Length: 505
Image 1 (cartoon, rainbow, N blue to C red):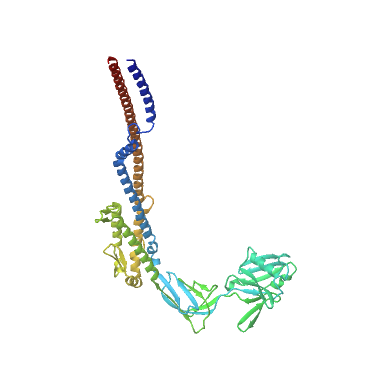
Image 2 (cartoon, rainbow, N blue to C red):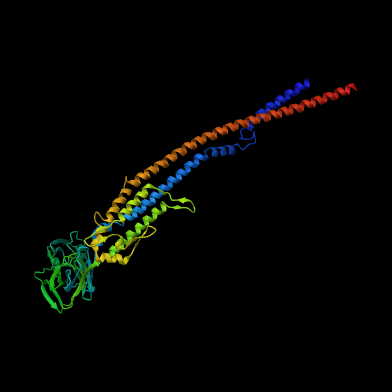
């Protein structure tokens, strides 16, 4: 019996030791049961949230696709709207072009206010700016004198003080050019074999811009730079006329107006760019003509600009139509639908667009539509332009074209109003986008709540599996103890039986 008690005591110690060891074993999840609890819990958590996660993911993808689709639609609308400005004003379509038969004599441009016609042009002389020159001196560093130079051009005068710091020919030129109230002259130094000269050049052409120079004060040396047209003495050599103030500057080029005739009528201009003679036409005079050799200025209709504007409009229109078709398409071979298939917003826009494009305007003798301008609808919904038909319409009946496209009731203005109602702040697309963004926010909130619930679910499962793992570990420890106890008892009984047999013998 003592042996049994001893065994029991030893086994109890062993069991206690095993229990202590079990607490260490349970620090690693799944050791007790041999199960991969982490993977099991992850799998169960994924399965628990699978349906909800899939639903939220699908909804987010659908909403995001719609946001992108509406962005594509809005971009196509903006592109089309950008082409409407030139079509809304009839003057933009009623282009004019001006040309000169001899473009070495003059060039010309015309605005939409010009009237098609032809004009005869002769040029007697071009407009010129005044140019004055001093007598030559040794160099630009030659001292001229001090005092005050007063330079007048037209009605403006600048008084420039010259002192010992800038009394050379170069210094005087720099002082003139640097004058803050320079009346419109530039000063330069011209050096030739005869020496260096001060050259004053007017910046504006025309007889009213003659240059006058006077001097006062100082040492009197600036008198060599004086020039007064009223007292100047003129000298003509061949075809060149100069005028000189005695002891002062020489005028090598007089300020004069351009003189020319239009249809035989004399005209003058202070500039070689003449814009006040023929209404809406600017003529740039380049050289003189012989009196008996006039050139011709022709003003005509220019359909190139209008054709370009209309062509750009049709291209943008086709881009919008293609965009809508793509967004609302369905491919039966792949069962793939566009993100806005069956969308009421786009369907409404398409109906309104067709209504505007299909309208017809009636004139005194003709009805005008896009088709009559050569802009026709194709089977696929796009539009094509017949350039010949369009050109004929622009040259033959421009008023009908502008009546259809331009003005407050024209196609361009109606489309502009329609597009603005969709794209403006607070418009239809803005409202739709706000709804989509609200939906995405709701999805995000639901996803956050789902993630939190799944985290709690995962933690609960982990706790339950860990408890099971602990229980299994304890059962294994008990099994180990019982097995050891059983083996110990069996061994003791066998030894007692052998001992008893030996005594009996």
